[in-house]
Figure 1 (cartoon, helix red, strand yellow):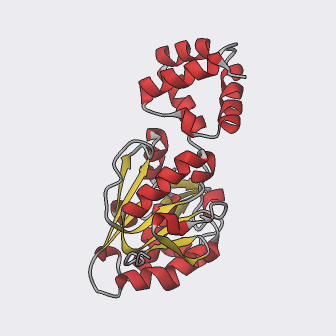
Figure 2 (cartoon, helix red, strand yellow):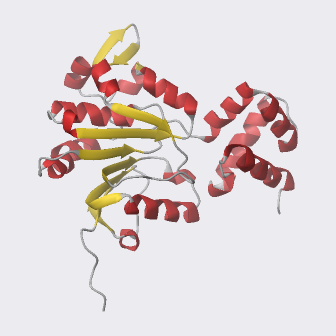
Length: 265
């Protein structure tokens, strides 16, 4: 049964913000937004939309809720170790610069993790790191470089010592690391991807999109990689048919863009 109230809300949000809620899994998103509007006492999405247009603080809260901002430094540490020990050295073998995009970077934990690893390898100066997210509020948090202790619980001790200063329970990222990353707002569903990149990191985001949206995004990620470049995804986001995007499994949750097309026939 079609929920006309919610369908109209989707249409209005797309016009106002260029965010297409129809590309997200409906059950999860509708439940999340229903809880949010009811918390403020609105009985319909129409009433909630009226309030969003009048109240910037409500719109900011809406954007925070529909963009899932869950991130930590070194989330799934063994995957970051694989990036450090295998894939980054492979990318750097030629001696030139490498280009990295951290897509849907949330509060910046992942691009900062990447920058710290590169610095410890002595190659941060040969790297360009761009970090993007839809939500300007989390980008502001990322640019501040300030984190609670729960965000750094998986940071290896030597990194914690060398790249953070501590004030109470607040951990501040080293200024040199902060300066190495370019943060900017970006809508994955509509904005150009740029590139070509040696490495694209997009983790624990795709699970919220519909299958159709995921298919389009994986194709665009692949198109934005250099031949041999790596797409690094989250621990719940295995790509079951990477070959349809001209990708191949390089390691669990790492996909490499093929360096040449397979022969036809």
